[in-house]
Length: 475
Ligand SMILES: NC(=O)C1=CN([C@@H]2O[C@H](COP(=O)(O)OP(=O)(O)OC[C@H]3O[C@@H](n4cnc5c(N)ncnc54)[C@H](OP(=O)(O)O)[C@@H]3O)[C@@H](O)[C@H]2O)C=CC1
Ligand SMILES: O=C1O[C@H](COP(=O)(O)O)[C@@H](O)[C@H](O)[C@H]1O
Image 1 (spheres, helix red, strand yellow):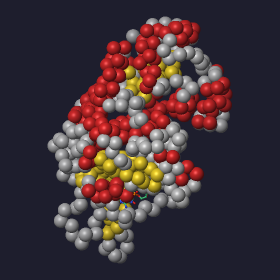
Image 2 (cartoon, helix red, strand yellow; image 1 turned 90 degrees about the vertical axis):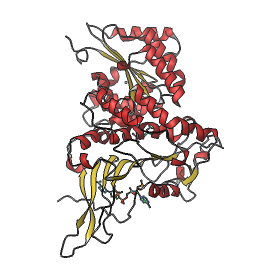
Image 3 (cartoon, protein in one colour; image 1 turned 180 degrees about the vertical axis):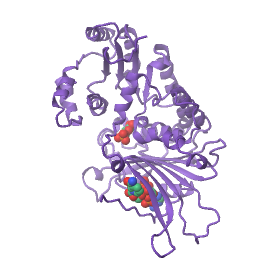
């Protein structure tokens, strides 16, 4: 039987929303890393990572692009698109991938028109979709039902680009290919798990979109919850994508909907001593309503009601306009019982740094080197830039788009996962919005609202303040 993903056959990649922000910043640069239209090209060029010597390949890449203008809701335009694609489909097999980088308002029209006018006749048709997958359980289900009427689940690739990040993909390996972690990965040994996302910039004039979603929908309900499920799930039966996603769904089903008492929401205010953008608070963004209560920061404690995790807080924390860019997982072990070191021991912590600079480090206690018998905090450290100097870590979208070509759904969100995620978040989102719950302020460029550190302590995450890291020097 012929291999339908064989790259000798034409694969048409249709980017709906080619002139938009997502296309410009993520999709074209990804496709290139390996488009026509001078307009698209001009907008995109500054985001393309072009290495010396790749100029010819870049030219060939742009030459292979066509731009078909049209309306999202007019079938005739899709028929023209279909004709355009067909021109390139010589030979017996040809596949089509449709990337929907379009606003949610046109989503239904676009998918119906693709289904009615653009389905491949000589190969597979796959659709890649990006969040928002709805804004609550009801709207998400409506969208899922709509898609299910048009496409089979195996044709739908729901992107959560965090699932394409090196260290997120590494979570399963760290957990299930190392006997050292498996026996301690439970409530007996682990005090808390902290999963953080921090960005050092605010909405910068793009608050219009953000304001109707907020950080909980933008980051927590998807990226952070996906990471949580990989950290907490049971070992899958095999590496088959459905076996893995079965386990992710199972662990999510053990989580009750988040309650208001377990959530802290914040909104950034300008820093009067800052420079440029830093002086601007969220409400100063002209595209944001002046009385907006949309959170730009959130911390939530999630409990997994199963025998492995009962009582262990999984703290999800995310925010914009903070002091740094960072995404990481901190698995904090419990205090050593029966301490013989007069309270000097500090908790072990396994840190999985997703970005920037992939790293895995385990904080542990050692005797300080030398004659004394003092304890000191130190680490076992795997820093990717040091250990894997020659390896180019691909961008999340590069991996994920390649997965679509090859039909690998392991790193994509299945319909039932999405349903569970909305079940967990919808009640609290509704409550926050219906009560117009006021977020606590935090200063642009800070670590977030001071109240967040109090919450961390409340949820059994201990910060010692004494750990000092010495960056290894070469030689
Ligand atoms: N391989 C590598 O590249 C390694 C790098 N390092 C670096 O060393 C430095 C220190 O390591 P780190 O693991 O952060 O250890 P720390 O113990 O210094 O800090 C742990 C985390 O606690 C949070 N924190 C800071 N202040 C408080 C507070 N008052 N209350 C509660 N939480 C607080 C910070 O995160 P937040 O601000 O997000 O709350 C911080 O990341 C970091 O810059 C780290 O990147 C360390 C080891 C290996
Ligand atoms: O999905 C989103 O992610 C980006 C952050 O992605 P990263 O890969 O740069 O960490 C965030 O800026 C955006 O608000 C959100 O929608």
